[in-house]
Length: 142
Image (cartoon, rainbow, N blue to C red; front, side, top):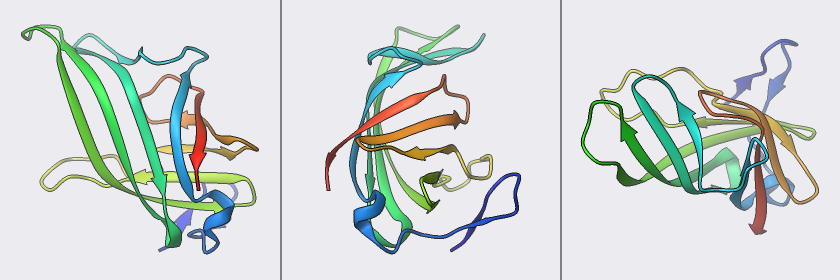
């Protein structure tokens, strides 16, 4: 699998060396605020992130587990949902892009869904589809 970078026409390739970005990353801040914090809000719904974990494995594959509180404008009381999904990632240098799997029968925006860089202690995403940014994830294991 190869993902194209926006802008320069460069190619990002799956991470063949898991020590470069592989590991488990925990969300520590959304726009400089620690969870729980609102990360999506519009006229229909407000979503508060309670916890988010990215598990990056070799060959550009991984999993994401998010626990979120949904409050729909015209709906019942807020509900807490745990969502687990597959992901793919690719990198070039310190740049990393993540794409989330699209559930069957869903209409999804094409990846990448997160674009950022690998830092000395984690990941910093400055572009994230629909989410407040920056998103800072701390590496908690390899």
